[in-house]
Image (cartoon, rainbow, N blue to C red; front, side):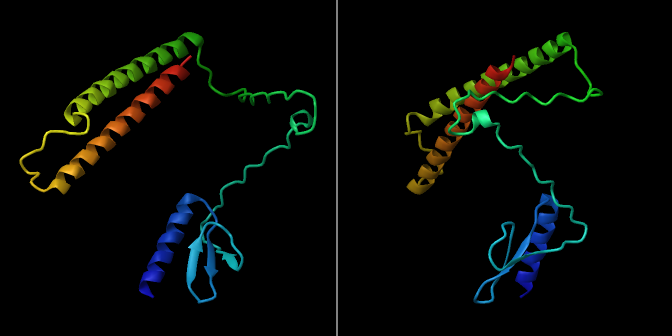
Length: 168
């Protein structure tokens, strides 16, 4: 019972920070479940100090973009910035983009160097066994970790390249 109360307290505490509605559900066996999705037989909890997140409302799609209409779809215009929104002049933005490009290029070079070193140590899936790896399972665990490191580094390189491609 204490665990249940503690779990409920943690859920309610976490939910208050997550800005979502928390539901209390009781199943046929009398088990209590707290969830963020309303199901049949669940009641929304009234949490003190809780302010629900605003609901995003979407405008209906224009007739031209609805299925069955022959007119070409027109892309929605970007929402304009408020008049008092701070503006950055073109040269300053270009300098910021150049700084960002430089930082990303440095990170990309570092990740590529790291990947090269990891692949050399990995030795095509057969890295050299270390003295403390008398147990084959320990060796395989290290090899699996090396595969994970290589895969993570490859994903980092892909992400950095995408970011560089997105800079104007």
